[in-house]
Length: 268
Image (cartoon, rainbow, N blue to C red; front, side, top):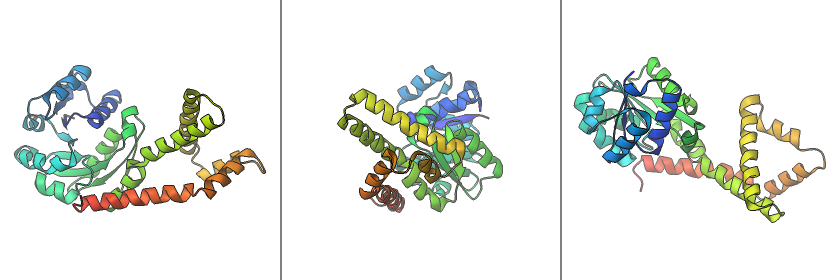
C-alpha cells in the first residue's frame, strides 16, 4: 500500500510512527507534504519516508491519503487535488468536516472515511472512531482499523455519533488531565511532595483504565472491589458524589458534543 500524508503535524507524525512500527507499510511506501516544507523534510529525515514539494505529487504517488490538515483548509485542499484523487481512498481527521462535504470536494469517484482520533495517539494509546462514506468498502474499513489500530483502540460508528465521540474521547484527555491534577493536589494537601503526588496520581489513573480494558468488568464492579464497608475509599466516593463529580463529567461530555455539532453546522 502506498500511503500519502497531507499535513505533517503532531497527529500525522504520531499516526505515521504507529503505522511504521506495526509494519502496516514500509517507509519507502509513504509520501508526505506540508504547507511548511520544513515539516515534511524533518519527518522524512526522522522516519525514512519521502518528502515531496506539493500535495499533488503526494496524491499521484499514493493509493490512500491521510488528510491531516486544519479543518478550515480540508475542503480547499481536496478541491485542488480532484484530478489526482479518482479511485483512491481519502481518510480525513479534520474535525467537524462532514462526509458529504468531503465527498463533494473530492469528487464522486473517491472513497471517503472520517476519523476522530485523540491526542494520546502521540503515545500510541489513542481512542479513535471512524465513519464510512457512501462509496467506502468493507476493505476500506479494515484498512482504517489497521492504520488507527496501530496507535490505540478504534471503532466504527455512524457519522451522526462522531460528535458524541468528540465529546467523550476527543475532548476526554483534557478531563483526565484535570482529574490527575486534582488528585495530585489532594496528595499535596495531605503532605506528599508535588512530584511524587503527580506520579502516583497519573499511574493510578493509568492503572485503573488498564484494569477496565483488561478485565472487561464494569467500572462500578471494580470500584466496589476497592470500597470496603466503612473504609477509606467509600468515604472518598461519598465526597465525590457530594461534589457532583459524576454529573459534572457527564455534562462535560454533553457540552463538548453539542459544541462539536454547532461547529459542524458552521458555528463560530
